Image 1 (tube, rainbow, N blue to C red):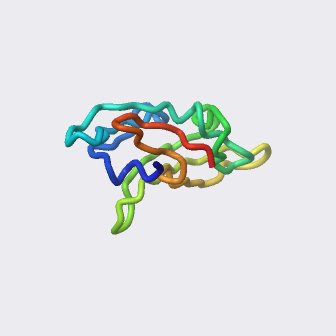
Image 2: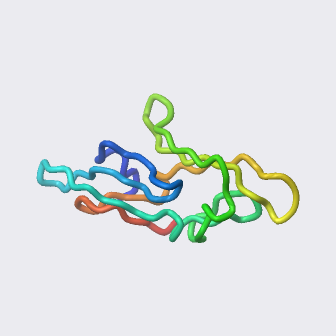
Length: 109
């Protein structure tokens, strides 16, 4: 069920943490869906962490893009560690985000 991007179109990020996509519903239709990534991704000392929460509260320069020849959905940001300067971090959203009949869902790692 992961790899939501393979069955979705017009994927974008709002306010640095709300994922939007038009997801295929299995009936040759696309349905608008959103998922607040702050409920599922945290910041663990400067690294993205699946199963955490609230990463955007300690992040700057948040960006999202479909990268590479396969169009992998990658979230990037500078994350604040416990001590020191912000750290560049990235996470492949296809690892734990799926499309369940037209709805974006988190799939636990």
